[in-house]
Image (cartoon, rainbow over all chains, first blue to last red; front, side, top):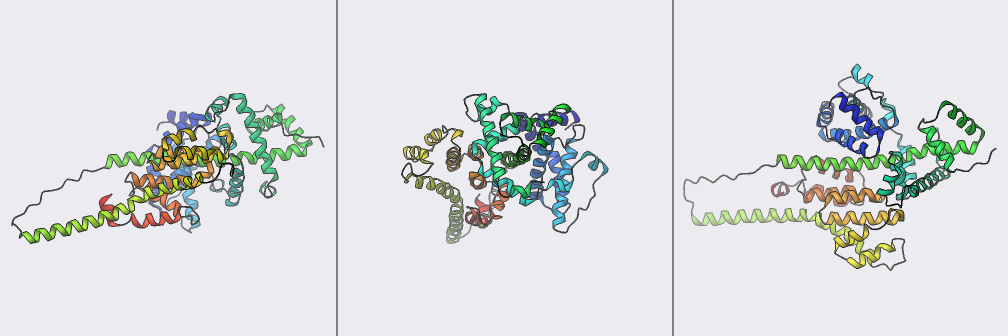
Length: 194
Length: 271
């Protein structure tokens, strides 16, 4: 994957919608980076299955960080993905009182704004968020997911079989209000607010 | 304190501030308004959390999508690596006595027959599990309409019984706007596709169903991998282990049984 291609993929993820899906599929199916991560893991107390799992986790973090702007376009996408995987694996090993045999290169540290602590969400918070999500209807989940992924109102209306884009927009507002009310009425929200 | 109502204008402001789409002047105004209004400030805090909640859904959808991509990769690799086993002709130098040949043939038949039966027993899990899915649906047919919010589904299920193709067509007409009913309809569609051995549409339907079909996604993939003879792939192992890692998973016992039986020599020999 050359620099121009990597830049294009990052822009596609930032653009959201179907372009994001396409870009993530291209990255996932690039066996080079996957093999490199698996090699790192098998050299550090893991097996190929761990490599596969870790690659999936790294892809999820990559997607989120690109969309949230934590990844700088000028950096290398593949080095970034590799660094995420390496940090995730380092965290995993730390829990088992094991260490990585290799350290992070300067290049990896520079290319990555990833910090181990930022990658792992507290389990309790995750549970709290999942609980809220489960209380929201499927229709609202889908609308808000598509909205957050920058799908247009026309695309949302088409995908969810709504009459038109203004119906979709109205539904989006209703769902946002519903979710915010759910959050405000949740007894754990006070503790979760930072 | 100013009165506050969480209307579209506020939501638009929250969104634009959150996405850093405001000019400096707009940002100052917005923050001043927020400072003046405690309810608006609390609503913004909840708005930020709502973004994280939706991230959980995005993450779940991406996980399902990645698993679909992985299934395709596994399937492609499987095809590329498939080997043709050539049987060599035995080179007999002496002619064995007739009864020895009969005994040998009977022994081979016995071993092969036993192994094949064992293999079929395990292989039928896929169909049995598929049948269990449908049995749950059939049980629903016995309930009287109006007893549950899923009542609109019963008519369809009653009408089409074992005609999955027509049932899927009708269930797919249920609008996402019906919320939980839509999810359940998609879950049934996924199970029917699984029963029919159509794995990709099954995975799509479970994804559409959302959280209600979380457990189905893994079990459906296991069934599909058994049906397509991919039980020695890392994906199969992964899916099975995922179910086994959660003793409360509805398919935990099935997964344990499958794990034990697919390890056997007969399975490797015939699969």
